[in-house]
Length: 395
Image (cartoon, rainbow, N blue to C red; front, side, top):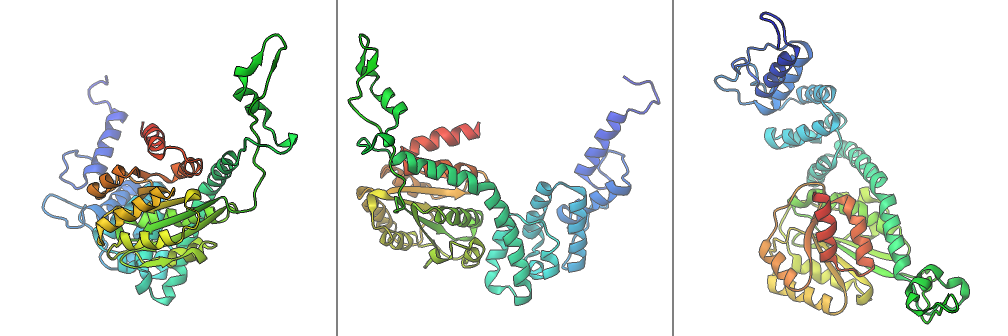
């Protein structure tokens, strides 16, 4: 409680924050902005109140189509807001102010804050990008890919190689050195002889010898329609990581109404991404047919379809092919999205039809994907894994 006429700093700060949220002189707060606050308000106005209108006051800016003005605005928001907020504002600017054309300017690409959404936008412009902007675009994509690899590679390799080692255990170890004594004792506790104080090992559990040969085949089949942009970026990075593991044979194909095999680009995820073409229609059946042809050892294979399941091809044929693969022993998984975003839009009828075939369909975050791969390699119940792991992450 303050005396009459005293200044309440907390109340003033609340008014200031409301003024920045509401904008305009007629917002009812009676709070004037100056200095950095006024410049911050102007940056917000340029994006979110560009149409102006009666009662909008000074928050009626707009960025127009001026590259210098947009570049200054990008500098401003990077000064006033944290990088996570900057990325959201950049994405909103592209969508609300139609700044896509300006992203083809090298000086603009050098000013933006790189993130997965920006990479998706650049990839969608790949075919119309002038040569002078291409190297700047590659630099943006390269920076984002490097950050994703730093974040995801170690976890993925650890999860996958651990799962391969566990799945290689044998019950017929050839040498004493191959026996896993801890697991052997636990597996034979029922054979404990109290009078002798010992366990009779009627069943041996051994380490599988480290194999140089391929143990699993992995096929990543990625929908490159416009709504799947973030999933394409993450899938490409994961594909490159999986391809670096000798015990896996990894293939990666992208599709719209046609199918492109990008397996030979897995050594360079940046080149791989520039080999995609975001947008267009969708023929999931054709893509599955091609991916099915890459499988040579069904019982040792994992087929991952990353798609929102909106099928433009022959639905019945698509479902028949999936049923054929599962009957042959292929571990089939459908990811409705592989991104950090929320619940995706997807074809619920097709998802339900796949579930009836025993094929789970769910969205997966990049941080959860290594665990998913480990579960698939060990042939665990993927539906149960998703319900448990992703449900835990949601809470």
